[in-house]
Length: 485
Image (spheres, rainbow, N blue to C red):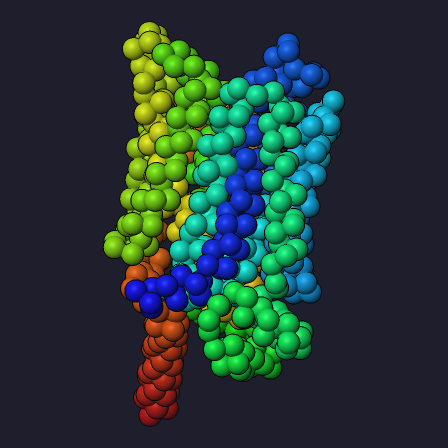
């Protein structure tokens, strides 16, 4: 019992930091699903200012355009200000985003709001896992990161409830209020010891270790951490880039980038942004579409819980495959419903199909496709390569997200709902063979074992290529001798 008490006393400050990250990710989840309940309102006669569908398409897409610039800014801020300060700075653009919604009297305010929120999204995506990884005890590092990531789903659900019952400015004011609490919290929390040691602030680093790891041997941790940081500092940025060019790291980056692409191209952004409009197009009337959005968003909370339970039992690959198959089947229900409507079926006889399809989609997309790439990013790269790898992958994800959202309305006009959701479903089906062939399984392996396995594969390939080259040279020499004779 005494040991358990000491364990709780030692790690509870880390959970305070994780709660702050969770609340900040929740803010971004609120903004991510903000468009779903308010798009129809902005196109209605009751809207505070006239807005066209084309303008609303830009309102939706600018979130992911801002995300690209946020990924660049986040990488720079981590290098110069540290991961904790970068998390704090992330609070500023999202606060401005909600303020712009409150002040909005034209669509340009919404453009600025979504772009500003996208900057926060890009910055946070690249820094919060690094921050939690630097302050966390190894035994709970994964739990802290998973807990923080779950804020995205919570934000989606809360906004679906507020959007159904509250005016746009009121929901924005409610979302803005916690931002001030977050700023105060992250101003109060100490910077990570990694950054402080790197800046030669040894006494502050000791205080940081003492704060985040209550009851530990501060001097021992400080000494070990300083050796680790000093070893990394011996490696120049050019050396880091060269190390990333190794075969197994190149493959790891490509694998995670493709997984991120599937995550963004699954339709999650478009369905979240346009869900209420999709339900209206599907002629759902058995339940009010705004209530269906709440139900669907709430069902998404099941996904992260399932992944925490299943990931370490069945592995990353199985979870990704199960998620992709579930997404494809769920989107097929939407496709079937719109096909039946086109054939003249009574909407009341088929309106349960899109409801079941959207619930299945939200459960499966948040149980694997959106979580596995982040987990793989943290597992396939050593600590000193994660910032560079995270920057590259986050920037790529931002570009793919923008392309996905920007092309939704044009594709909808070209293909209609009957074929657009089928297209997304077939695309996700191709992720299954990709995962089976290229994605490594890391279940039950330590980070050191993962790196050893990747390095051994790289060496075995190099050895194989050298042997093939030697054999080819020997054969060429034999042919030359024969020809000479």
